Length: 264
Length: 328
Image 1: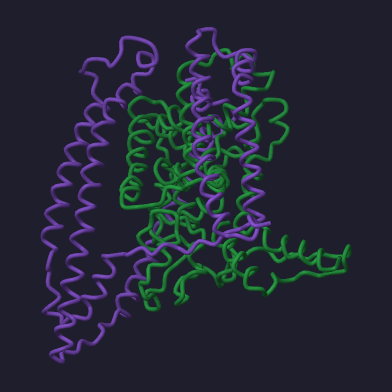
Image 2 (image 1 turned 60 degrees about the vertical axis):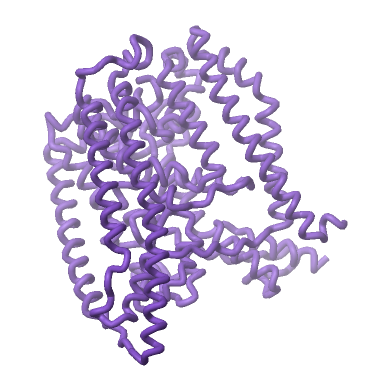
């Protein structure tokens, strides 16, 4: 009864339970992956017997996982919780609104240049990484990753694997600069806030600038783009039906796609 | 006794699925309406397969009654030396214009599956700047696997190496059937790789909201291009917006603002906006504003003689129904 009434005890139990379920989920997932690779490595191929035997070996942990989820579901229904949404500071928009409160001549770029340079560098790095990745993806002049097996049969997979590290490097540069951008934006926000306070102290008043005309222009442009895209879509569909594109879709869809189901 | 039935009725009213969930379930069933195929292990070959469904649904699923837009696009690009792929491009443009990423939020069975897995109570990975940057990886997948690989190597790169819909719906839908023993015998390393990826996505979906949609799905990337011009979806009234950030805070996708290319238009932000600045586009024509994510009103009849029209007015009940509205 104490457990049912005491919210903090229930919270503690909830956290421990969630952690256990997380770990067990990852464990059962790993078991599934291992069993599939064991079937493949044994060399006898995938048959009903081999799949059944391998699945039965991990049946107990899988059933424990199902039972744990069922218990968790019942517990969550009996004792529901309410989480407040986390506050998320959208620095760029905040800065824009703060700058609207500065006189137009004073809406200066306090820390803008540093962010601009950082993103230019990230862009160049990403461009270089993308170019190298594209070369690996499309060129055949290099040493193969492996001499046989999966990569020999699927050379496009080999090329993808070669290009992936470069793709991740490009993303790494973008992630690093995004952290720098957040730091720089916060610094600029505090500078602008102190400027606004200083202006207020000196009696400088700024009128809000109207955005009605901008909104109307945007709506008009959106309307024309919609009409253009809609017309193009209809023309393409009619053209596609006329030139046999629709028949191609039907032809592919009514036959089993061996690549889709993992046969290659 | 009357009180007991009243409590049961109130419980059902609080836990009814939202309209968005009902639409997701209906669309998943509609895409896979060929129930017979699950029993005889054969895929549907009827004329409806001329048309692409809006969401990601493998056409090798034995239940599928429509074509997969992504698979059709890759196939059309593979055959682009013979025929310009205008039909599939036109269909994608039409879906994007009419619905945009509302398809992701309402009409995709893979998205539904991930949301249901995310409901399992475990520690969750919260979104951050890192996940926002990683969300651009799906554009890399789009360019490399959906465009370059089919054009250069005439194979559907995404379907062959990544697509979990193909492995789950097509592979696991067809292979266990005794009529397809021949297919089972031909499985090799590619299936092992795809199955590994499927299990990783399923496990990751328990901890990370819509992990496939956010980081890998090229169809979401395509529909994201139409985010500003789509006819349906959520929209933000900038005049009313006070930039409190609650909408971005409550959203589990990597949005920077409501309605951008990452927004799946689920409508969870509408109820949290204190300035009522968020509403549905086309709300006058199609839906009542702020209505889609509200739970259905339940009517409980004769056993107790009770008619339950609204959730009870108690504080706890209203708090719980707010949670259901946000989380469903």
